[in-house]
Image 1 (cartoon, rainbow, N blue to C red):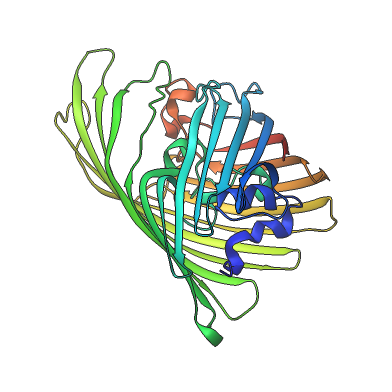
Image 2 (image 1 turned 30 degrees about the horizontal axis):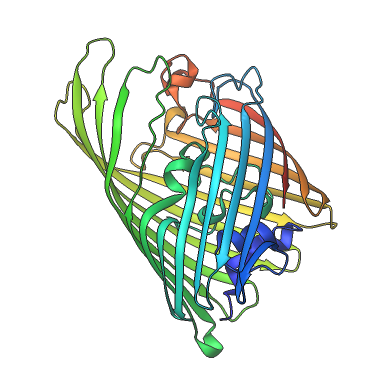
Length: 399
């Protein structure tokens, strides 16, 4: 099977990323570390990564409660395995642990796992905890070596929701087909559930008492244009969250159902050492509450999200990049700092060698939409600093 041209675009701006991306996509890698060959046609491959970052913000705490002071609570470690059991059957899994403020605390878990049977080029099936094909980069968002930025644009890929948005447990159909002179199509369709680990911030005015996801379903369709390096696509995801909410000060509780519909349109052009990408997304969210004094019912709220990104590999070891990301929490109320977040980011990536990268990144942000008031002394978002900065340093080693 000829793989879609767009399936590994970040390799153009990251030497050595073939290992990680090949594994994550369930594809054979010519550089894989073959550690066991039980029989002819079968090989067990192992890969891993260790990442450590530093974060410093001004004005507002972001991602973790002490980012204004500066923090090293930005660590990740992963070990993954894949095996090609037969010509058509493949399995894989990843063990992962991280520390991002109060999230993770280095508790190791099975990040993703799958059984993949590819019957034809145009039809295959995966089962297990399978990465969600949402937008261009969600299914590679756990691979630091596969991209230039430290943080993908937060309007569409919020890092705080990584555990929630990375993968779903269920089934996926996928395929790839040539359209001749018109290019090619790649599709992925999935249905299942998401197991959510609740991480309540100490002192938060509302406490979640578990989260259940009765369903998540969606898909992504990507068109590879006959122009080299150009692909266009769309993603759709529907899900529902059921949760109990507790008010610690009164002991009152409510049962809340939150249906959501997430959409995104994607455009990418990657040729030579140049990468250009842009995405536009709308998320539709509503809820019904058993006790409106604890948590109110709300009609559908539509958030608008978009970004434009560029990167260019100047030298084998040097790749600068930048993006502009914007988030409006409610398209009907765009004014006020609490209803918007503009993010201008610039990154310099250094490939020290084929297994070690270092990144420096700075953000100028205008607005507070999407921030967590519990990380900022329970202050309302409208009272937080409107214009602020975020700085990150990150290094990752991988094999």
